[in-house]
Length: 610
Image 1 (cartoon, one colour):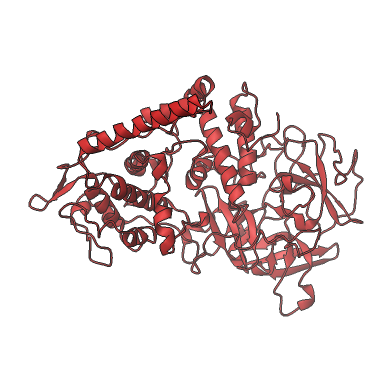
Image 2 (tube, helix red, strand yellow):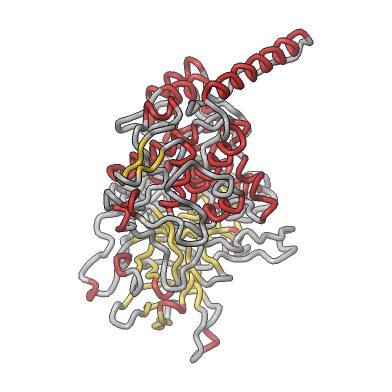
């Protein structure tokens, strides 16, 4: 495989795959890049977010046989045109919006952050793409298991996380034995750029209980001399005591690096324990993505729920064999700062048995053993890395935030009887939309969730031309735009008011939201940010995104487009304006050709409401 080129517009080059690559090769390339650039591993990095979107969009196209055929034959334009002309039903991904939370796309590399996240979760099902120690199908043996005291009633992790770990064989065929076992045979180890180490054989060494075990899956972080490798995954092969560095074998590569501890992020597995506010989380397994020192919490990916949660150490049971750091012990402060190996977890007392040396085993509370990401100090290795600041998702002090279904919206009459206009949001079911209802202040309330989902839907319905019949208590398509009316004679739910994002429940809302987004021309895609920035809204932070927030922003953006471009015109006037605009564009293109300038004639397809 060639090196991925994330600056390219070619999907194969983005993934670093030849054009004749099979499905397994494409998926392997995608999962490696997606894990490397995942925004939750690279907080506050715009580059990581954009790269994550790019690789997700590339794989979303090439993993679908029909779309790949269109791409190979006509390029990206053919795929976009195909998506715009088809409703994409069935079991496929349906473009970039066939999973919860997204709208339709247009142009190149326009998969939104949330859509890329949803596609990532969909691509791996219930498996854990950040882990690599369950399943072990391609590693030539089982993992070490996660063992607790006998009172636990056996291994709480059972046979693995739903469907196995898609990265269980991420190092190819070169890692015989278990991830933390003794069989570390396989591909040779080569030094590179002065950072590597030649190690054709590894002599046996005495057990060190304060050293990360061989076979631990890690990510590289904070490298300066090889910054391009930050985010790459690998496995610990050896600890060199005289240099206090680890030899790490990189994923899908013969390359090894000699790395300082502060440049490693361990991805170990955990069990969630004793969450009072969300008891359904108890017993769930997950993978540590990072430790947030400023907040004293772990960011954990729970594969079975396909989401990230932020938890205190007292609610997280680290797997046996993990090397962690002692902290917060008041009775014996001399222990703080030491590192030790977790040997066992005793459920009755919620304590670990921790081995600090060959002759010393102590018991410590779960919250006294943490798995920190070492913070690089200014000037250390020439780096001033603050990348682990604010690394967790938003924290609910009473437990992780889990979006709950909204029961009232499940009533079929909710759209005509639910309360609207009773708070600060100005809206009435009756009559056409007013300028006051469509003001920027109203849009700000939509994105800041200072109004209900029903109120947002109601305003969009009115803008589209639906009118409320008070006597019969129903919405009618009295003045709906012709193209829209043909597809949606009844007003659809654009938000997903029930807040249940299963395919069966959410599909109609998803499709209508996609259709609404596709009706916005490219020049108006960013209208909302332009309008709201002067009054203090600059967009959502990636870690804040939910399907509800994304769809609210999409609805608000469409309302701004309607207000600026459609409001007050008849359908005939709109069609005439469109004709004149196309004529002007054709004239401008002809002039450019006469001047010998290159003309890009392709534009993202738009399915206008009129």
